[in-house]
Length: 388
Image 1 (cartoon, rainbow, N blue to C red):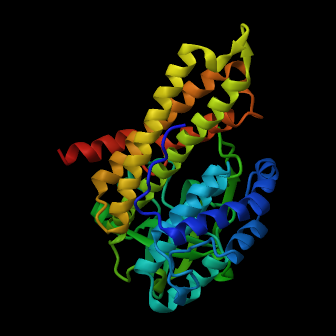
Image 2 (image 1 turned 45 degrees about the vertical axis):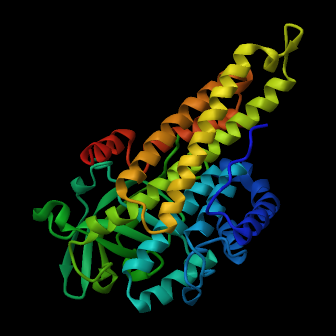
Image 3 (image 1 turned 90 degrees about the vertical axis):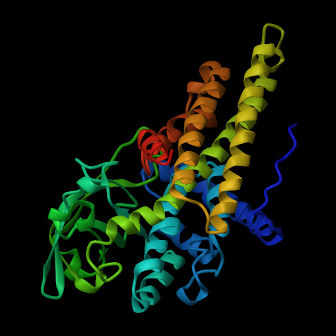
């Protein structure tokens, strides 16, 4: 057994929280996974249970309904969701708790924070970031959704695609062009309160998309046809700040993808070591073959290197020093290695690795998105190259 890496950012309080979170998820969430997968969505009762347990928005200040923690507390929950195979919910959680709530905390008015954030922390409401469009994925500057000022309101027209929490979301942070002539400088973020009958008029949720993996992570099309949103729902209160607001948050968003990737590699090595030590072949176990040992040695080494790198990034994040280039490096390297390690581990399972009842098969399908969402590997390379 390889020596466990000392995690510099983990303290006694966080360790206790991790253990309590693991117990709660094992009892309340993990038994729901197969049902979520069949239904293609995490039900609202489960969101509320997570809120009641204090596991949603744990880094939000207590004044806004949170637990008053730091991003370290968010990471503990994200890792445990992933470690227990709740990858669909982990992705939903990352959007809701790790991204949307932080946009609101950073850019909403005081009154809006006190109205919106406690409901997100309680699981009463669910958040989504409506950014990607059919013709604008990684090219955020290319979005076409348009918000035109009309007195005390903005009128939004356009469409979005691949939106996580799209079916469940009550609060949607919508990336719009408020001045299409200005390119990136014309992008603004506007919060749509989907439960408000006035704002809901003209807003429509499209189909729940059928994906390769992450079956319970509800991913949807969204349509805006003359949707009227109060002008005060413009985040930051000044038009044209949306692109900058998005970029400020992206290093943390990308680190979340890397954190998930690091946990996946550890799980893959664990699953495969256990399987190969039990599976007989030619009078001995598969693990007894030197090729198996060498492959697992390589995978375990990559997983350990990833853990050390990502934990260093977490320390930088908590110190307020994680820059966009390092965030891009973390996502690029970890998600690429994640795919390599899991592919090697599936191969060592033989035909059983292709069967969905084996956790390695689920991992194989689920992790493919990690090299795309939050910016593709190619975009990460472009970001890194600009810093050279």
